[in-house]
Image 1 (cartoon, rainbow, N blue to C red):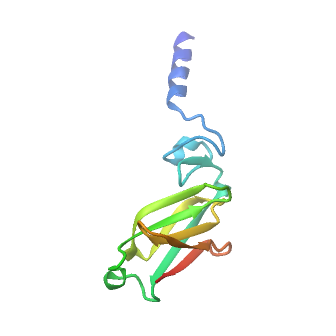
Image 2: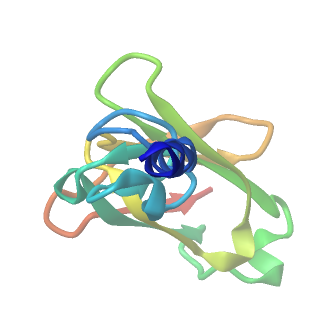
Image 3: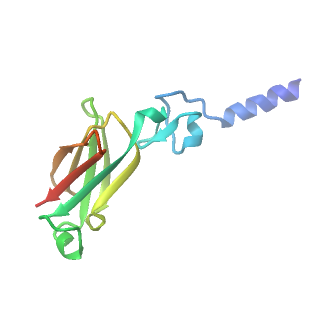
Length: 136
C-alpha cells in the first residue's frame, strides 16, 4: 500500500494539473482534454481558431525587391481586454503571411507593421479568420 501511495505521488508530481482556461503550457499534453493555445495557456479547443495574416507591399507580392525597405515586420494580436496582446517579432516580410493555428478567439484585431516602428490595424474577419494588409 505504501508503494502505491508513493507511485501515485510521483505520477502527480510529473502531471499537469491545469484546468480549462488556466495554467501555463508549451504543448497540448499539459492541458488534459484542452489545447495549449498560442501564448501558453490551456483552453478548450472551442476557444481557439487558426488565423491567417496576409500582406502585400504597395499592392505587390512580398519579394526580395518589395521587402528590401522593411525586411522585418511585427504582428500583434489584440484581445478584447486592454493590454491583452500577443506579439510576434521579427516576422520576415518575405513570407507574405503568418498563420497562427491555435489563437484564442478573444483576439479580434491584428496590427502589422515594420519592426521598430508603428503599424496599421485590421479586424480578423469572422467568416474567413483572415486579416489582409497592404504595406505602404
